[in-house]
Image (tube, rainbow, N blue to C red; front, top):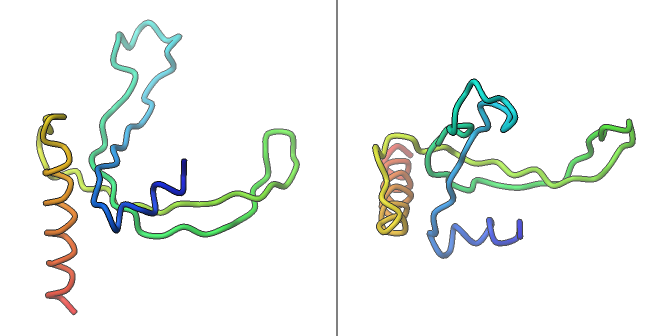
Length: 98
């Protein structure tokens, strides 16, 4: 599945970011256990090593993304168009700065 993330540069599809704000067991939070962070832009990936919960070293792939959170509300019916506009506009603005 992670190999699909890399294809965002070619196909400009949306990747949504969410953050868990509370455990699903925490009833004091209500139904909103997740916070929407915005659309992600794939930047790069690379291999690394990490220590797991049992203290064993394992090989992992790390992915870096840029979060685009300035889009306001996002209708799922328009997510592909919105994502493409956000990614294209950001890339264009960065080219102008160079």
